[in-house]
Length: 160
Image (cartoon, rainbow, N blue to C red):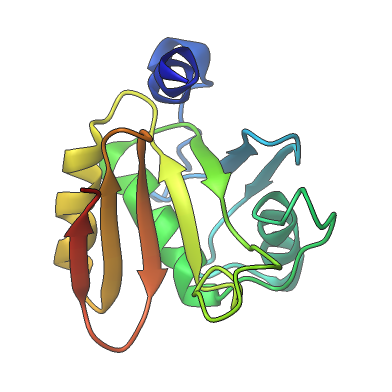
C-alpha cells in the first residue's frame, strides 16, 4: 500500500501541466482503478466544463466495481480544477469518485472524490480546499489521499 501511495504522489511520473495562453490549464484526471485518463479544458478561469468535458471527467470518476458512472456534480469538477490550477499539477490522481454502493454518501450522489495531487502534500491540498468553502474536506494520512465533497456547510476532518 505504501508503494502505491508513493506512486500517486510522485510528480516525476506525471505529465507537465498544459497551460493555455489565457492562464487556464487543461484538467487531466487519471483513475488509479483502471478507468483511464480524461482531459477537459475549462470554459472559465475557475472551471466550468462543457457537456463533453463533464462526461469525460465523470467517466474517470466512475465506479470500477459496478462498471458504471453518473454525471458528477459540476461544482465538484470545478473544485478539482481549482486545486489542480492552484498547485499547477499536470494530473490529478483519482482514488475514488462515484460509488454505486455508498448509499447515503456524497460519493453515491456524484458529489465527492478522493484524490491525490502529485508533488503536493495532502495537508496543503486540504488547507487550500478549506479556503474554497462549502466543502467537506477529509485528510487520510494512512490511506494517502484527500477527500473533497460539495455541500451546503463546510466540514473538515482527519482520519483517526
